[in-house]
Length: 258
Image (cartoon, rainbow, N blue to C red):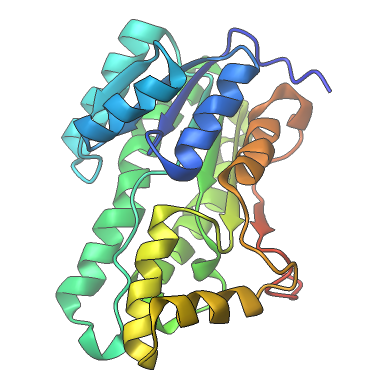
């Protein structure tokens, strides 16, 4: 299928590793021009080694002013953003007995506001231009509560509502907004989560991994490239009537109808 993404300008937050990096590779393969943002200069350097010459911007997206400045720079150097893919930020996995109000607040800052701080300036520009797509990579923790991922799950749930609400608000302005909820995916973030899970259940990380895999009917975690494949399609003109939805990709781990 020809996705008609050649020459489109795509900004990917969290594009230096994991699902974000896989998305960057997939958009490049379709001929898109991309920019990636990350808080870490070292991670951006590693990403450039994989991707080649692409626009990279280091910014702490939990800071609204820095996020807005990052968007301004991307549009100044790359041109008007046609598609935004949010994959930045992840809340720390914390066993429930170790939670504090500060941990809940940090979860929102790490996941919810790293997205909202970028969405806000971008969606307004897209609305003024009468076109654009935003794909938020959220996470299944917003639908199914996990004891070691409660602050992050709460942030994910808030992002899901923001996604469908903004999709409804901006549909008349030609902007599509949707979310993808990956389940367990083979990334460093999931590996970090295993440490908290193992600590809570008094087991080794290897045992926690096996326990996690046993809960996936497909018998394996997703690969970042699999999430990226759907993201690229969702952001393409081929998905022109797809908006205001949250798409689960969890290997049938949560057999529910929503």
